Image 1: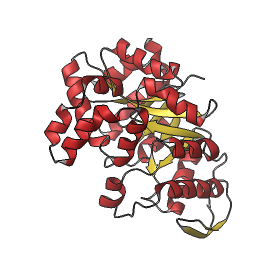
Image 2: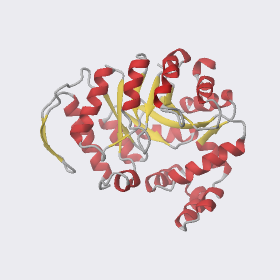
Image 3: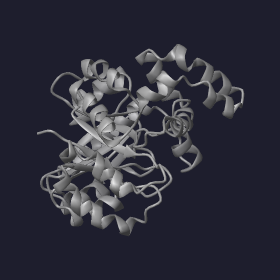
Image 4: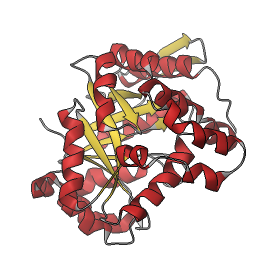
Length: 318
């Protein structure tokens, strides 16, 4: 089945006002809605609403941090959504970033690979309804059992950028979720996870023909995200280290404006899709053609009618 996902909620639109569009998404050809969790809505509440507004859609978190909830609470939150959307919920987990974990949630960002692996293994057992007593390398759980274990248990996907985490996702999760990559990068990621693993990616789309506006917004996002060590290492692995070095040097010197200015146009254009609706849709499709299973469109604000933009990007329009 060909999948075509969308990130909710939309910037500047109250959550309750999403209903009319979410109800329409299946008829437009969208198969999935996915959420993120930074400093806006939590990852679960918008999907609870979507589960009732459009029961045909698959629902996914991309991602819930493994550090910001205890293991039991994370299992309970996932179980609740899996009960509301049987067979249609994907729990995407990942490490997030030191800023979100340490600075905003007072957690320790330590041993990210091991913590991801341990959380994945705990969730497998807990969501299967087992009583879990286990000393994992990064945490311990004693006599935990869900009172409402979901049937079926939800799929669990793992956020992954570089080979180690990608291989863990392929070996122990139901798929890999990645972010901030170009269509031309997909074959490299696919080569690590193998041909049969579901590969999900959030794709940033700015539906405007004003390239200067799109690139300006894209530069701000790129300098904010790709200066995070994990993303910097990811793009080194993808081969953009030299192109992004001036940005990193300016950022490290505290020259934020300069960091934006020195990001090459070709990097912005590779990582942030822009143009009219037809051009944007074709570029999203190029990710799929290169091996991506599930594109998840993140519509960037242009000041226009976001609902109209979502309709224009729908696969049914193609």
